[in-house]
Image (cartoon, rainbow, N blue to C red):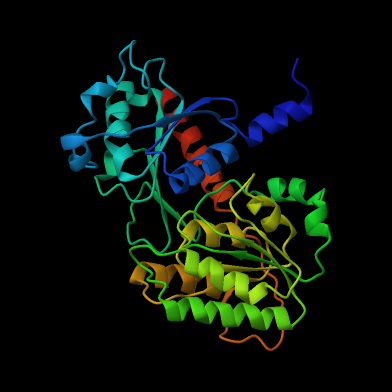
Length: 341
């Protein structure tokens, strides 16, 4: 017999425990977003990494799924029935597969696409795009940041115990989250030098540092962060062992993040702690809209060339996964009601 608390929890999370397929091309950024939403919905997640080749890769997202996937066939390695209750897809390579699933499963699977699929509105039951994207429609929802797994409860759990090496750092502890060059931001040598100067000025205010590079961080950028903080108490992750990034997020008093990653900036803004954004050369209209929205929300500020006084500010932590999950649940319940009518 269900207890009142269990029944109430089921009411709050109506999709909890249902099977979900998550289709991506396996890129970390894609998996982070899809997993974050699936975790917020408390789904039973089955990852489906696809890697179409040749014509099928070139035709994505508009073309059909690679026939080798054998969508719906009992002998399919990835896509054998029974159909999941929910499917979440993100990235252009995933779109032909969720479209095929939607056709075959009909109303048995609630289909969600994260990011603009560049295809028609009927690609999915629900499409999420960040607010800085221009796509809108009856089945489109937006939030300022991307979904991720650093919910308030996850961060609270991480904060219950502090690793001794982090506890030994004097306050204020500043997490420095480094991205790197991409098709939007160039990270010139002058940019690396600017970041070095800014970080050194933060250190002069008595800060300690927790520094983590990403896969895209180039060596000159890492070296600049190393030189800037060499005289201060710090942790500089060298890529060996588990990434301390989650603990850095949870235990930072302030964060510095490079502007090139929407995911990393959004995760920093989930902490409710002040976030400085370092903007290298380059940029785009989309990224400009994204960062302007976060500044207007009070979550972020531009990292000054030189910091003479440590500022602090407060804002409501941004948890887009929770916001998107609530809308998914509302629409899923509505759809179920209509199908039952």
